[in-house]
Length: 351
Ligand code: F0G
Image (cartoon, rainbow, N blue to C red; front, side, top):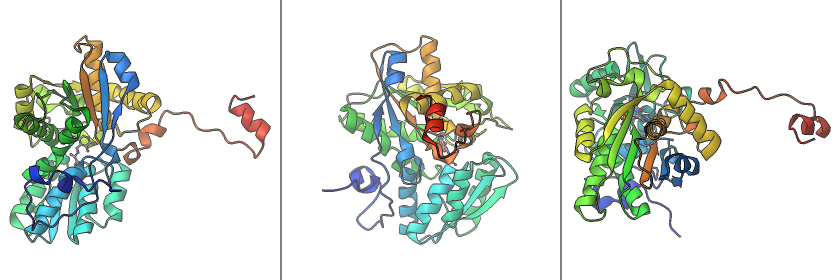
């Protein structure tokens, strides 16, 4: 028997590591590719969900973080820093523990989900809540990493992208070829950059016969790439992608244009509708930002922009448990019953 060894060991020959790189891993990657029945019916396509919430800290960030922390350790770093809307900080904090390093995280005051804050805290990160948005946090993190002895582990660090590209490898390895379309939520735009790199590498080596069209979706209140200009005060209930000036903006445009894809927006209402559909009809509980990919696919299908018969993969980037407020909000309160079978049966509609 053997278990999945984590993305560095599974894809070592495709990553910038050597025999002397210390591998800091929580066995990330190897996440489920789940056929989505309801989405397939609605689109007339074969739709799969790449469930990245199944990673060790509950998001795709772990793929990049195993690389970033391993390379930082190799370089002798004692401390790492990141700006984050929550998931990167949770991942950095956990991997820093594994590496015996100190982690510092900068988060936008009041704008990160409770589960993510809990993760950073329990893993012992030094947390600063910044009186500003994610973009301000990233500016500050870059400044600190340039002037103090601390390594930056945001996705502007190219080894993060290297780690995250392995999700594309897994999808092609599983499907036997690249899908026709790949759909992602877009925030700081590192992940769409990474997936596109991974797909191109597999196609170049003949492992896939081609590359998918890349479709990225931003939240309407935080859609600088769609608007073509920086959004000064980004807003959305999907706090993970509440970003007004994405670091990998140009790479996202490149992924869009080289792949013949698109970058569009979805409203918070559309995000929440997809969030509920995924949980209630596919059995997959994701955080709101993750549902932006599925919201985008549904929107495109309703506009008649999805030809039937295609293979489509939607990445759902983070676990629903990160931000359960949206699951509870608006749902009916469970009723309380005495320890009595007849009453319970009646309340359950069984009697
Ligand atoms: N989905 C989730 C759940 C995220 O946490 C993020 C980014 C994205 C999508 C967008 O990915 O930035 O590569 O375009 N979260 C970052 C963070 C910003 O700090 O955790 P992207």
